[in-house]
Image 1 (cartoon, rainbow, N blue to C red):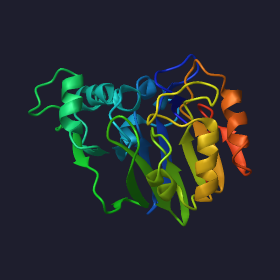
Image 2: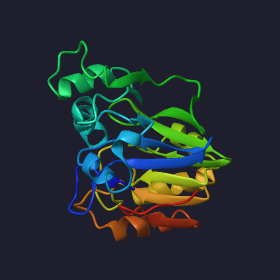
Image 3: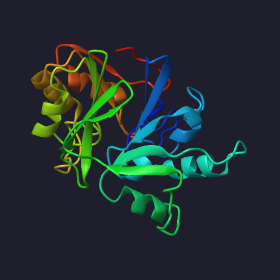
Length: 248
C-alpha cells in the first residue's frame, strides 16, 4: 500500500497507489496501480521507482494519476541518464492529459519517457501478469483492474459506484481491493463512489476471498466504514493500511 487516501493525500497517506510485485523468470516484476498525488515520494520507501515495469491508471482524476508528472521528471532528468520508456496504460487521451498537466507541448509531451497505451477489451499481458479491465461507474471514464498471476487474483475497484462491471471483474478474486469513500448515513451524490456497505455487498455478490477497503477520505472515520462493510460481508474484511504488504 503505497498510498490509499481518498480524493486527496491525507495526514498519514498519499493518494491512491498500489505496488504489485511477483517473482517470475528469474526476476522481480513490479507494476503500479495508479500514481496519485503524493505517491511518488512514498514509493521510494518500498521500491526503486526506476525499477517499475509499468503503470496502470484506473482513471484520470488527480488523486489517481497526477504524480506521473513527477515520475516524468525523474525518468527524463535522472543523473544516471534518460531512462528507457515504460508502458503506461489508461483511458483514451491519457498522453494528452498528462502533457497538459505538466504544461508540455503535446508533441512529444511525455511520450519519450512513457509508452502510453489505451485499454482494450482483451486482457493485456506483462511478464507474469494477466490484466483484465472493465469499465465502471464514475463521472469520468474509469476502470476496474483484475490482475492474475500464478493462479491467484487481485481485483482493484478503482473509483466507482456499485455496478455490474465491478462485480463481474471481481468475481472469485482472492483479494478485492475496493474503494469505500462514502458513508451510508450521508446524502451521497449518485454514480460516484461506494459506501462501506456497498463494498461489502459487491464482495459478497462476487464471492471474493478477502475484502480490503481503501480510498477512505481523511474527513471520514475509517472504523465507521469498516463497520458498514461488516454488515454486508461475512468474510475477512479489513482496512488497507499505508505501508503494509499483503501476500495473495
